[in-house]
Image (cartoon, rainbow, N blue to C red; front, side, top):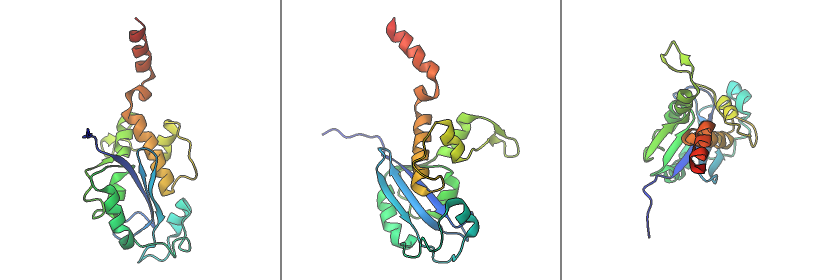
Length: 188
């Protein structure tokens, strides 16, 4: 039986109580396989934070929504088993990774879709001297992704990240002229 050396790619997204990994906590985790199968889609009950009105206004997840949800500690082994040996693609990796350092330690690799899209999309962040980073909603719109529900829900954001990543990794999709050129070569 032949084996493939290609890593299995998965997509991960979090929704949190805020922007500080030191003070805020995860309220939702989504993990999606490259073939579109949902590997994990669960809300998470914070153990320290009681309310998060600013974040709730963005993702819509309330304290009541997560009251009966598992904690991150309850989910750690499950997350580790899913990601072990996989290539993980995250939109804004620097943010999500801080919340899951231990759980993602056995991943084969972790790549940032936001940085890849910024290099592709163009524009310069003069203050930071790097390509200007774009929101996931901007990237998703650019690749004509159709949202299955609201943005800022973990599994939906995983689906959008998958669409953006696949677009970026497929040169023919990015450059229609390339496809035309290939068609001309084949017709000669």
